[in-house]
Image (tube, rainbow, N blue to C red; front, side, top):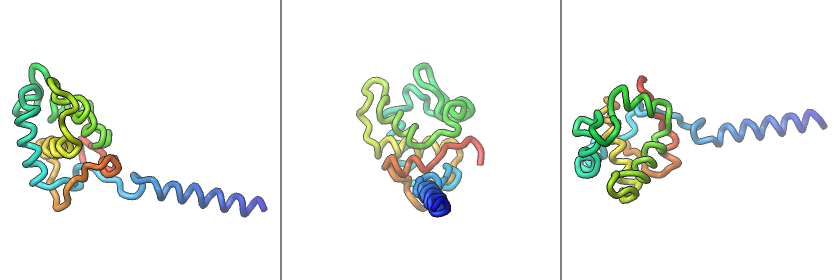
Length: 141
């Protein structure tokens, strides 16, 4: 009886680990998780909504923090892409927060990834939170 219970409990724990999205497909931006077309669309959105505060070079400006380089990585290394997308979507642009859609915010993030030397791939970065949770931002490969 105890052996069956132990086997059943082990099976539940194992099944739970397999059902965890991050356990299924952990990736970083170094795995080419966005397309060049997405980053191009993100660049246009960045120029319209973000560049004034964060600088055309993404290194920060008088109002906005850096979105590239060491200062960016000091804040974002190890965090899920969904966190950056949600920060942009909920708090930016500073003069009209919450006006960018999740898809637009995701495109801006792909531009940020590109400017931080992450390679583009053949598959677009999906804007759904579940997909964005599977991508961890990492300073190095």
